[in-house]
Amino acid sequence: MIEYTLIASSKNNELSNSVNKLLKEGWKLYGTPFLAKYSFAQALTKELQTKNPIPAEQDTGGISNDRR
Image (tube, rainbow, N blue to C red):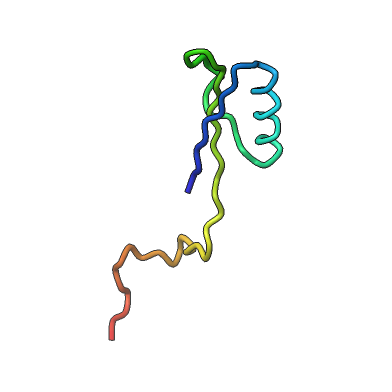
């Protein structure tokens, strides 16, 4: 699952500081910075770790291979 966030600031340097902090936490840039009304904005995404993921080779899509 992917988490999405949008950060904004009226000051360019504040946006840069916020973006740099999130990048260090594992977030990735999504698109380019843009101007929204009177604020600079940047979208970021982060891959979320799921609890107990099902390995692909075990995922049968609901179809059973049991032939008893």
